[in-house]
Image (cartoon, rainbow, N blue to C red):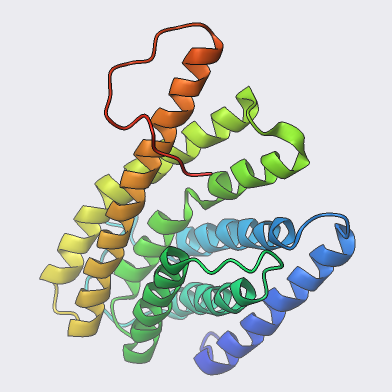
Length: 243
């Protein structure tokens, strides 16, 4: 195959591989929950996705250039690995032993699958999509770390609060600073309409999660201030939770 990747085979192999990693995690952490093992897989994917996105950048003086260009083999590899992960994780949610179906999470996965899948199908806008992959996954290790810490006994600790704040800050900078700029250049360039629509959809989803994260951080900081005997800051968002 050389540097050319059969996208369909890559995605199928990727779904099988992510599933195999999950089974391995279940064997290694047999006393932990289904979600705990799945979040380890998700952390591995986030680190791998950011690394592949980083390695696929063609011009560091303009990371999103060339715009509306044909995807390179490295870019297709990065996107294919992530599409496979999204499919695996969407299916995995259906087998969660807590039997919780999250519409928010399902929508996020579907937008990702459709958007990245469209880019792979058209073999266009590789630079923009790799940049989107980097932006969306850079905060994910901290998202999963905060939940993993809770299960191993560090709920309501300073370490867990630090993970919350790190996640919130990185997410906010990536999604609400880098995200709008990337959405603008993607919509402005000569990209297929479906790519433009999914770029806007992803930014809307990011805005929704940003709102929930702000509420979560203010809620956690308010609880911490109460523990320290300090008066809570005046705000209308103190009741927000994202546990």
